Amino acid sequence: MRQTAPGSEPDLIARAERFAGLTIEQLASKTGTRRPQNLNSHKGWVGELLEIALGADASSRPVPDFEHLGIELKTIPLDQNGLPRESTHVCTVQMKDLAGQHWKNSTVYGKLKRVLWIPIEASSSIPLSERRIGRPIIWSPSANQEEILREDWEEQIELIATGRLDELDARMGTYLQIRPKAANARSLAPAADADGAPTRTLPRGFYLRATFTRLILVQGTSE
Image (cartoon, rainbow, N blue to C red; front, top):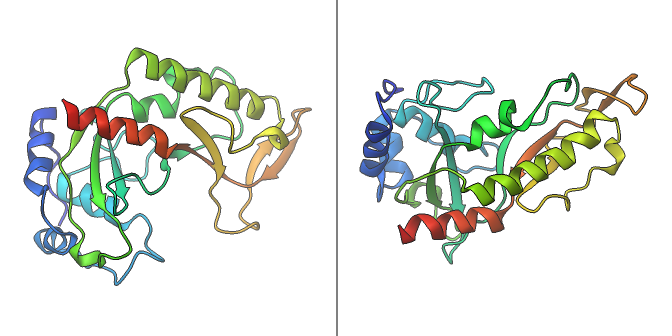
């Protein structure tokens, strides 16, 4: 059962703190949510479980998960050494109609200006039901971090806006990268080529590199 939306940032953090130390099975039981046997075909399920438990209200819209608070929820799956296992999906890349798009009004900025990070045990040696939820970290990018994120975003968005899709490379970006996110090559999204003519291409997503989320973990545990 989805909880009511939290009334304030302190309320949200307090809720997340109460879940720290619980197993996935315990949290699923608290919310009456059916747990899958594994995440092979349910990659986003843990995040959805936390959205239900914390009262996220954005659904699938391109706004922060707690829209009324301007706070995004992101989980960080951790390996056996307590380090991020993978990059973190931020949002889908808009592949056309980019006129007037700027960093401050971008979906990426809206998602990252205030984030509630929740670490989750994700070692393959731990059954899904027994994986524990970590202590939450409330975070906003520092001025330096935001500058690097903005530069990454602008560099890659310029290639899309000018139709130079073939120049996009997952190695681009210090903190923020663009990668294909389609399940297969037949899943194509509308785009524009270098001449502005309609074309179709693989859907792509913005992702934060694991090296960056590791910095956020270190920052959060040292405060």
